[in-house]
Length: 79
Image (cartoon, rainbow, N blue to C red; front, side, top):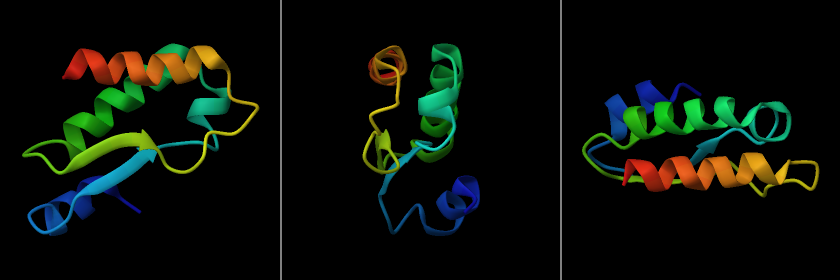
């Protein structure tokens, strides 16, 4: 699903939860890839409020701890 389109259509009615990819970005990306995705999702879904940043589902065991820390660190920088 296109997060930008969902925000445009429903952002005044819904809150969004997740949107950080657990199939590619978190397990296989570099920490900077994770940071870039976090910045993108905050910019896209956080505009005007209504976004809870987290992974799309449970973080899997093959996810490097550096990527998990990068996700939370980047979110903290944005707050």
